[in-house]
Image (cartoon, rainbow, N blue to C red):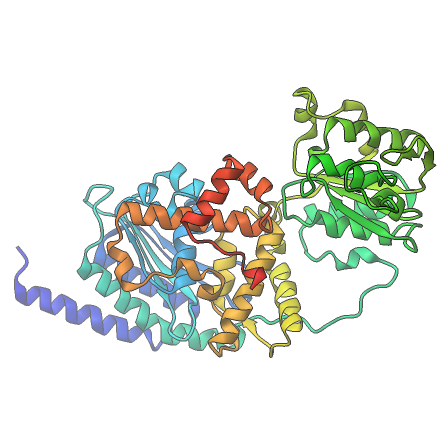
Amino acid sequence: MTTELETVRREREFYRSLLALCDHENLDVLLGDALTLLVARVGAREAMIEVIGDDIDGPPHVVAHGCDGNRVAAISSFVSRGIIGQAMATGTPVVTANAAEDPRFLQFESVRRNQLEAVLCMPIGRTMHVGVLYLQGKQGASDFQPYGAEVQREVELAARTLSGPLERMLSRRDTIVPEPRRAKTADDPFSAIRGRSQVMADVVERLRLAAPLDVHVLLTGPSGVGKTLLANAVHLASRRRGGPFVEINCAAIPENLLENELFGSEPGAYTGAPRGGTKGKVEAAEGGTLFLDEIAELSPGAQAKLLQLLQSKTYYRLGSSDMRHADVRVVTATNVNLKTAIAEKKFREDLYFRLGVLEARVPSLAERSDDLIPLGLVFLKQALERHQLPRKSLSPSAVRALQSAEWPGNVRQLSNRIESATIHAHLRGSDYIDGHDIFPDDAQSPDDTSATLQTSTRRFQRNHILGVLTSTEWNMHEAARILDVSRSQIYNLVRIHELKDLRRG
C-alpha cells in the first residue's frame, strides 16, 4: 500500500524529470523522453505526442506508446481528428469518458466508427499552439473510466513544461505566410486553379485539353469545389475568350421564371412582361460561353427547350413563333448524380448525353487534402487584399485546425472561414491567425465543461446548420437538400437559433 511519503517522493521525482526536459535540444529525444515519463506517471493504454514539424505544411512529428505505426496514423489522421483538432483550435483540453457518445464529436463519423474510449487531449503551447498530448484508455481500468482531475493537472503541467523548448525549437518556422503576388500566366487561365494534388491536376489537364475544342462540358462533383472557377477557365482558354461568359444558377430561379431567364420573352408574353420584352441569357452569351450551374434543377419543359438549343442551335423567346439562332458554347455543372436522376425519371437521358460530350468530376476537398493549406494561403492573401489589412500568418494551431476539420462545404466553406478568421485576428490586433479565429464557435468558456447533453446537442445543431448555410452561400433550397429537411423547417431553424448571414452586415 502506497504511503503518503512515497506519494510525495514520486511527485517530486516527476516534477524534477519534467524540469530536466527543458535542457533537451533534440526534438525527437525531447518528445520520446516526455512521453515515457508521462505514460509511467498516468498509466495510459495508448498515448501520443504530436507536434507541428519544422516543415509546417508537411507531416507532424509524432511519438507514440502502446500502438504501432498503423494505429498511430489512425489516431493522428482519422480516428480522433475532431478531438485533436478542437484541442489545437481552441487551446483548451478535451476530456471525455466516451468520445463516441460525446455530443461534441457526433459529426465525426470516424470517432463513432472506432468507438473511442476515455480520452484526454491537452494542447501544447503558450504563445501559439504547436501540438497536443493525447492519452486514451487506462491500464488496468475499464474502457470508459474518465481521467480524473489530478491526472489532468499533471498532464497540463507536462504540456506547459514542453511548451518552452518546443516553441524555441520551432521558432524558425512557426508560421506560414502567403506567397508574394505572382503575375498570372496570360496564356494559361488554369494557372488560377491552385493546389498540388494529383487528382486535381488530372482534372485541370483534362479541361485544358478540351477547352479549345468547343465541345459542351459537364462538371460534376459536390457543392463548393470550384466548378464555376473551372468553367470560367475553360471559357478563357477557348477560342470564345473574346466573347461573354454568362452564368445562371438554375436552382436560384423559380421554375416559372427560368425559361424567361434563359430564352427571354416578347412584349406581352405574360402578365407584367416588360414593354420592350426581355433578353435571355442565351442571347446575352452570343459568341461566348453559357454556364448553367445546378443543371439538375431544370424543369422538364426547360430541359426539352435546352435539348433543342443543343441539337439545332435554335430557340424561341417566350410568346414568339420566330426561331432564333444561337452561337454559344454550353458548360454545365451539378452536384447531383445525373445517372440516378435519369433512372428516377427526373432528368432526360438524351439531354445528359448532349451535355456530357466531355464530363469531368471535380473532387471534394477531402479527396485533395494536399491542396488544403495552399488554398488557405491563397484565400488569406485575397482576404488581406480585399480588406486592405496588414500582413498576417497562419499559426501552427491554425494549420492543425484546418487539417483536422471536416469540410462539407469544400473550397467555398474554406474560403469563407479564412476570410472570417482574417477579420477576427485583425480585430484582436494579432499578426497571426490562430485556430480559434478559424473556428470561434468551438472555443469553450469555463462554464461549458458542465454543459448538459441538451445544451451540447443544441450547440452542435446550431454550428452544423450554420456551416451548411455558409457553404451554400445561404441558398435555402440547397441547404434543405443537404440537411434532408423542408425549406420551411430551414427557416424555422434559422429563427430558433438566431442565425444571421454575416455577408449582409
